[in-house]
Length: 392
Image (tube, rainbow, N blue to C red; front, top):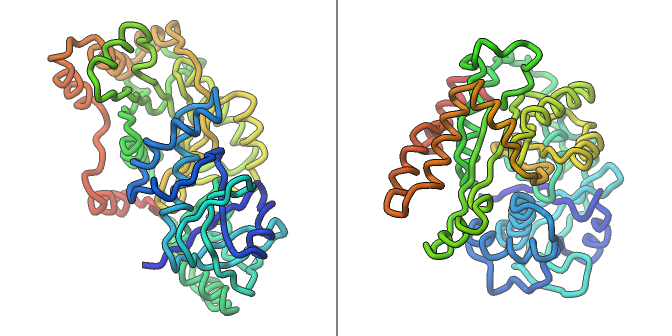
């Protein structure tokens, strides 16, 4: 099946014109190595091999940021198939349109060394001619964005037809069925599990009656943990003995349905900041983010280090990675005393970390049993979204 992707060629499309003139798309990501012989079919295998190279070139950056960068690089180098269509912002309010025409190749000492040959079309698509939904999707932050769901509209725009947009205007708007914010938790926790992060919803209503309204920004919506998985037991034993904090990373997530304005962004962002000061990584997560907030999101992320994740085209995308920080044990103590869900989560993690080798599996099984349940199949996820009116 042919796929459609929005590809950003440099910040604000600064290399788009050059790529169109020379017949390719490309990426950099600070990986100075020919990847021709190291492009597995599975992006997870690629990330395992490439993340250390990225971190070597970007000291001080987190593994999360490395995973995002390497994932985008794999998409361009391997994920895109010959015949797939790419839309690339020109930086002037239009999109260049091309078709992938060749496999990966490497051109060292250039701005975009990791390349794919592209046959560019003469047709240029004005952004203003797109439907609002397609504009929202193509305007997402990140190098790559799958927009295959808009295939019919894109093809109409390529051939110059406006039938899709015209039909949209003629159709009676469907009544919007709302969904509960907490209905998103299972979706998000299932996504986190694909990143080897085990997550649990923290039910605010289970907190001690001593909690008053002044402390409403104390609890995260979801907490997560990622254990370092070393294949050699001796390596793991040494790490636990010398650097125990490196064997586990704790995450805090503030989840919202939609961010619609600059004011709302700031309100939610500082709520996430307050709720996550105890964790290694804190994130603000939104199912939908309105256009025009990119600059402010970037400023807040640079200033305070809380990451931002958005739901896009059926996938959760890390728009801005969180900055790693040390655990705040005083706040962890406070949360343990306030909320039994949180306390149980921390207690089970401690038991995994302190379990003798022969009991580690048993401790991990016990820990996993208290985490949020995730989807076992795509079909189960699809049914869930329909039942809960989630436009997934």
